[in-house]
Length: 339
Image (cartoon, rainbow, N blue to C red; front, side):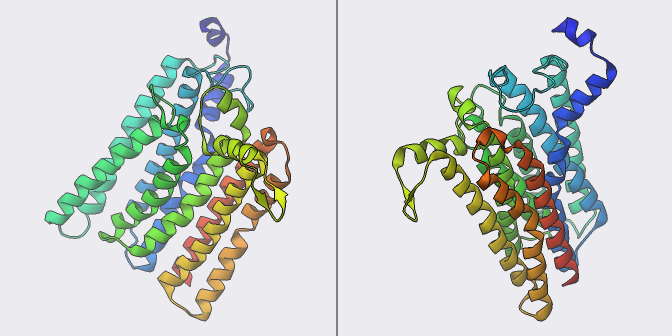
């Protein structure tokens, strides 16, 4: 492997690191920051310095998760010659485990430092500091450490939670609920119940992006001991003999039913969220219609996923689903500001 690394050009090394960062996933990580900023603007509490720091921290957390995924999957034997998706930089020997460890440590340290700065900017440069603010700072520091740990231990360590079927759930929590609820708190310095609705609504398509990856690798993961919601649903569909409209549901369909439910529930909740924040008016109804229209890319990708019979060919729907979620987040943010 060392000889291969030495013979690799600088361009190939840069390309491997860019691939490891998975740029196509980074806009998705920013979605929670956008919606939190939109809610803050609707409440008259938006602050640009909080937004910028929150955006950077969110993106760095996604980079940590992506680096950890490469490192952990190779260490646990998932990234071998039978892997369904494209070969990664570590798998090809361009990035060594030691280099990835250093990159992980450095990115974690930078994320923690910027997270501390975000907390300081939010609370010490915001409203007057009191006992409640001190307690809130401690809670947010714990949230930050937990978010970094969750990003790392998705596939790293002796018992990675991503191999126990918890990847979708943790993505839902940290890039949906925590991103929006905690993000809005950093502006408002209070819990806004509406942020809970938006956090759930965003977490669902985030989990859907994870589900595409898991559907693609479902049988390969199962053969190597990695349990995901996708391969559990596949086995359930193959074994239970359930029917829908008189048609037997197989494993492929079971995975897609779950995926469909995630996106349609998200649509319902985002429209409800706008009415919760803005009340009932003609402008709010227009905003709700705009949000429905913004789901079109997601629904187009969903149609392709449902119609594709081979789960190993679903990777091409990853980027449209990720970017479609960002488009929805942008539209929701615009509606919060102007409706």
